[in-house]
Length: 140
Image 1 (cartoon, one colour):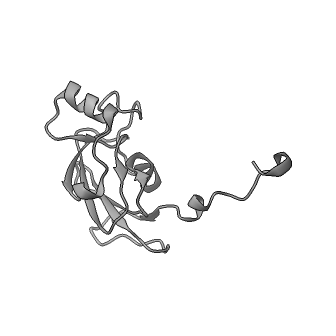
Image 2 (cartoon, rainbow, N blue to C red):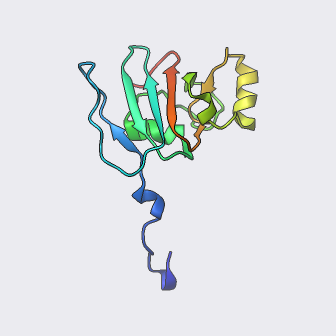
Image 3 (tube, rainbow, N blue to C red):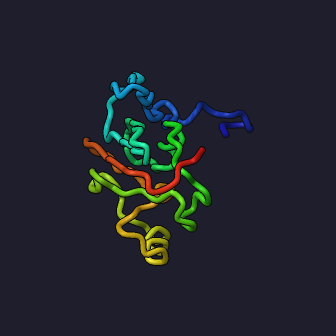
């Protein structure tokens, strides 16, 4: 809120929203939506091998990137308590923040083999590709 209760300008962060590529139905590369300088590229691979690609500026939550790409990753709690949004990191682990306390506790509780949870992952800034494979179910 600006002065006198009048809304101020939109936050600058909205001007740098993630750039989303449409998933390719035929296996051809998706159409890139123009945007500014790109940092990490996130590839979300579904069990069906369909791939969703999101270019990001980094320092963003993976859950928000999945939502922006309309990737059907199954989220339930969105708070690292249920384990529904499990993913395997196939490439680019160095571009992700290490598991926080909530995610570490969930990983210990569920005993999943190296899985991370999309609702708890933050993407770091830096150039490179992050490839994530969705475990199990996808949202319908």
